[in-house]
Length: 475
Image 1 (spheres, rainbow, N blue to C red):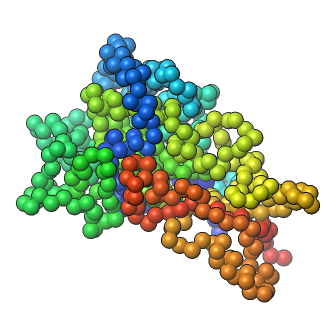
Image 2 (image 1 turned 30 degrees about the horizontal axis):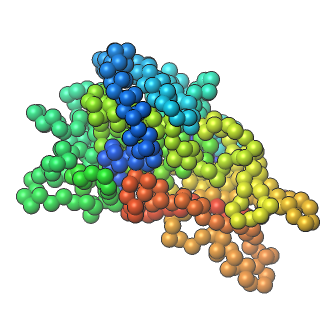
């Protein structure tokens, strides 16, 4: 019988077709569309973008000949893999200007192609040990990573994965896209998912999602067939067909996000970028699905400005906004976000527990995927410093994105332990809490909607339990 093992990497227990199918369902059932401005609201950098220094930088860069030449070189290439290096050269030039603003960067970044190199994905785990032969590799197109990373070789180094359109063509529409209408310059390019296709915001489309006429001009905000939903707080809502079918490019970029989630286990969300010639689409993934900005044409002044803002967000926004869970921050280290390869060795503080710390030792279980609980279980040492000296004991900490309306595990255990002999049969719970601000709805609120509606909203909950040695064999 083959050994069963949970995996820190998303593809080891699934065939490629299986991965595609469940990611397709995840995206189809949960994807939300917003405008580019609403998407960038997440970065909380409006003060920077309203400053005279920013305006001057944009004006100077837009007319700079080197920038224009680098963009022309990249935009003139149609073969997908040949685009990577010229695109990165252009973005690197833009980043140099962005980082010269009179503001201290949160991180220094660089954008690099994978150079046809697969990145290491973590192995599977069984009974707290790595399972030999389960570590594999997976190759992105281009990634954004911390500038101090010497060589790209692991998914743990990826800040933002980037996907280029497969088989770029100006005359071919990809699966799921609405065909382009000749003479309609406001229509978005082929390859844009259908629910993000729209005319100018001031002109509501009279077409339904299947292309049939809608004589009443009514636009459905929520699909009655699928659990997709839509909010567009900072602009007039764009029409969206009721049925969204993810393209192969959508599924590919979701796989990149899934690997970025799985690499270490300390990400609450992941940003990604899709490039289709001069058209770019910004993506956000969390444990409830995806948010996608309307496609922008970066050869236009508006699209170029939006892309510059996105790059500046990668440089200046705080680590937690980029997706690094502040709970897994270690006060004993100053390592920048994106360089951590593993969680063990971190010393964490338990909220509202004086003189109590938790030192992670190794991973016992790590579940992956895109939408779901993404359960992470680590063996740890619970240390309490008090009047009786230092007290240490072995524990496990379980972190998972549970439905926000479900009863927390620690509450159930505490209720069970009211029984006299429960201690003889039921694991002891030392502490349990829901991480403040770590719900999908609170994360999505950063897009500018105070109370967004999230399908099956999830909250990140942590539970510290006594460690019980597993039975691995019978005598």
